[in-house]
Length: 555
Ligand SMILES: *[C@@H]1O[C@H](CO)[C@@H](O)[C@H](O)[C@H]1NC(C)=O
Ligand SMILES: *[C@@H]1O[C@H](CO)[C@@H](O)[C@H](O)[C@H]1NC(C)=O
Ligand SMILES: *[C@@H]1O[C@H](CO)[C@@H](O)[C@H](O)[C@H]1NC(C)=O
Image (tube, rainbow, N blue to C red; front, top):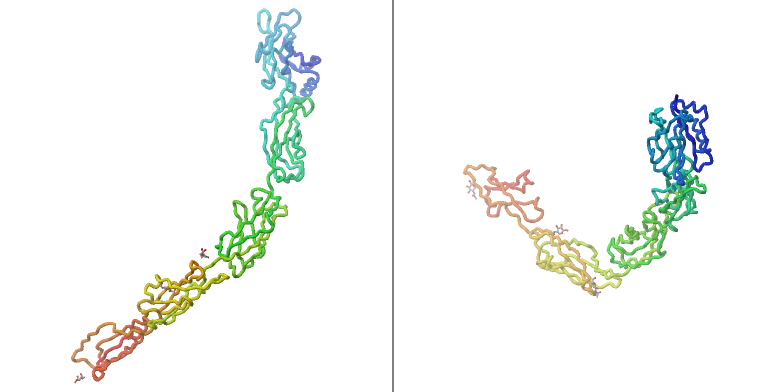
């Protein structure tokens, strides 16, 4: 005879207990033992729908968190061996048997003795057995079943990762997603709505919205401008029970920062800048600063500066100071007060970066007025280097040439000239202090020095510190002041039987004067020898290029 374990279904706080196993189902359980479960009317329906997927028969349910005055009845075991008068008892073993779960040996009623927490332990596996009450002899093999702890909504949603920070570009379109938050709920996600979360926004409207299901936070207002307000605090609530009243809720904060886009033009701090620049300001040095402000930040606030009008001669340039974003006006060419005393430039600042579709790059213009300030300038020579020539052996006081310098200042001073004596140690030259005329002070010899490169100073009469210098390169020109000389001393030997036409000696000559090569010499016998018919001197044909050698020949 087989043993059948039956479950009486309990529900706390349930209205009724309902046996759900009909006879046909009882037979379906077949086997030696069976436990069947349900926990109330609604649950009974759920059980039926479960039945379609596969009958789960050997489990019982008990509600978590129940803390009534009496132990809660979980269910009842029953066997058909239990017919009146037979001496049997029910024995319970397994997880929590005797501690959490107690069985009435006679009736088979199982009670939960303690309050249970599904989130701590969701199910217990136990075995039940029917034994002879006198002998403890098993009347059946033990049968295993499960007690499931049934969820109640005792856990609120929680935002584990919050608080959140997020950023989104300013001016983003309505509906642009900003970020997503996630809440978790420890309650049973598959049973009931205890873990079904719905999100709503408590703070942050009308700027942001939240999708109730996905918890995606989105832009809800058109044209949010970083330059107006940069940071927003959004509070999001998650509520379980599908958001219905009675559900539990949790909140989190999302700090949303708007990031910059280039939506602001540069703007000059003034529409007119005026600078006074001394005419002797060195090239590349700053003559003034302009600044275009931009309400954007970072690269979006960067500008380049350009001169777009008024600088046809290319006198100026504007570069950007990368630290301060100022435009530095610099000189490209020297100014000259005496030529031009004022400039009016139009400068432009242009954003370096332009947002696609923004209508940029943004720009602004300003006027820059430059007044050239007169500086006391030193004299200026008509040439930086003078090249003069003088014949060697020219007489003393010969005028070699002239230098000229003038004071460029509008109130031009007279100029005096001097030779820097350390460039003319031997005082070979003089200069007329008033007119710059250079004359010869001592005779020159080209063959000693071919060049005399001297320095001449011009000094303003009005201010002796205002001086400048020029180089005067004096070249000494050759005149033929050197006689030819024989290259050697010649000593010739002649045999007695020398024949007419025989060459006795070849002679040649050199000359110190220019040119070093290619002098043309004439050779003659000295007058004493002219009466001697026995010797003659002859040109050496074909030997011209070799220093004009000539032959002494027997006549
Ligand atoms: C003097 O100046 C000339 C021309 O510049 C140059 O050719 C020459 O070498 C210089 N001579 C000396 C001695 O500096
Ligand atoms: C003379 O010139 C020097 C050099 O440029 C300048 O420093 C000085 O102030 C001038 N003196 C006068 C009296 O102008
Ligand atoms: C020239 O030579 C002849 C014959 O050798 C000799 O007699 C004569 O004295 C010479 N003349 C002179 C001027 O040496």
